[in-house]
Length: 194
Image 1 (cartoon, rainbow, N blue to C red):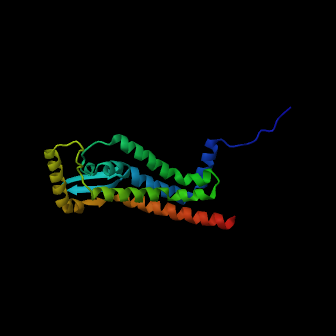
Image 2: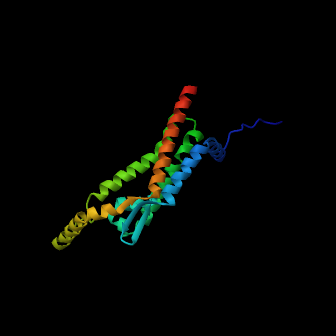
Image 3: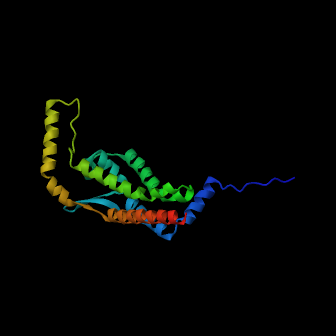
């Protein structure tokens, strides 16, 4: 007595099938974003002979504390959490191939959205106070914080001129735009064929 066994693929099998359906263009675009986010500098600060670069996954520390652009502070846990978010967004284009729902084609936009939102936060935080005043600080501490912020903002023109977008920023932007446009085109093709 034999019973028919349904050939339901496992989650790992569905993931392998999704990866095989991505296509070379998507894989290359994802690789470009991966290199831009994790292996090359996104922001570069050059002051004389000193060059300090930040990779995209380290941008969370600048959002949390803009002074970290100058190498001040440690945000290792925050960078680890943001790196995990980056990986999730980078793998998001697998979603429409893994789960069959037409709305999931928007997942191809995840890397570009993360890039733009993080860039907006960096711009906003960099234009605000670098040294926030502690809530329970005495008058002298508050005055010193205001003085430090004034000095930074007055010299900010010099510093801003020394901050540039690194190769990683351009690679990530190029790869993210390619993914978003490709996902939109594939969604349109799916709608037409349905």
